[in-house]
Image 1: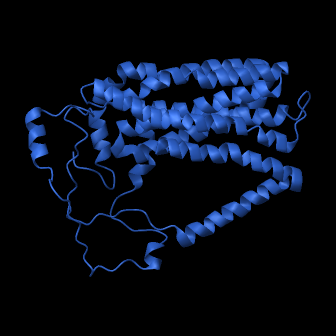
Image 2: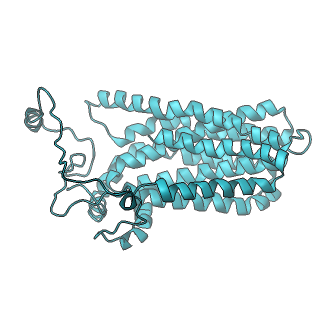
Image 3: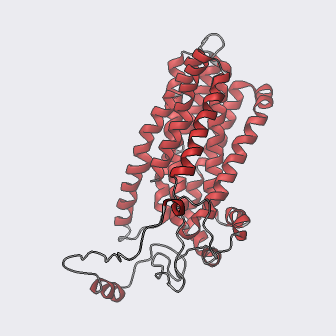
Length: 362
């Protein structure tokens, strides 16, 4: 699921500029913003009239099922004792599976009820104003995901901005549509990385869990992040140094393919690791991740002009590649200390989880 989310995100991030290049050629650059307004307006209208309320409001007096995934020490993946395992297996249904009974007296909600602007509940929401920041700063897995997302998106912002500045100048002399088409190589890399970061990563954790006596631990996802960490920095070096030396544009395109591959693999692993570690507070955790991601990627664009003037194109990409390699190798630290960190934060995790509007019983 994470891989699909990131792939669709990359469709907008890399294929959107392809369309905007042709719009700038055919209708003028101002029409790029006009088309954005048109599409956002269509999305706004579609949301009002077709996007149903998705919040689940549980009935009072209904107890939540016991949470199976978190043991007394707060570590997911503990193996169940054989006696308990036998008892659980004996309770599993056997034979034919019967269908659920549907009460025909319960009428479906009307269209107006399904499209309600808001759904009132008794659950408090004020804690969601500060919990994301607490989770971001006190849970190492969430902090790792936020730093990874923010730094990778900052690299993406640098790459696309520098393309628009330098590819229109000699020796390349790209047209606006040519600059837009140069976003196809990183998308190709993302498409390849979609299978590696998604399907292959899931296969690898199944193999690792099998070797670990059938026990899955979130840190098992991080093994693939170690070799994947070199792709994004290498792609940046090929693109940046090649651009500063005026090499053929095909070399730059190869660097962008490598960049896109590392982009989606590293982000998918980071997001999946965060989700697996803290499933019951993932909503607030992702708010903190998105806040950090946007903050870093916006700030980097404000300082990019001065950074280029101070270090030059070559120095900027070398420094950024070194920084990114250090950040993307953080999984090596979590492989050693990640499980211990989850054990130490188990009490805080439980206290945060029970504050959620809907949560499983601990």
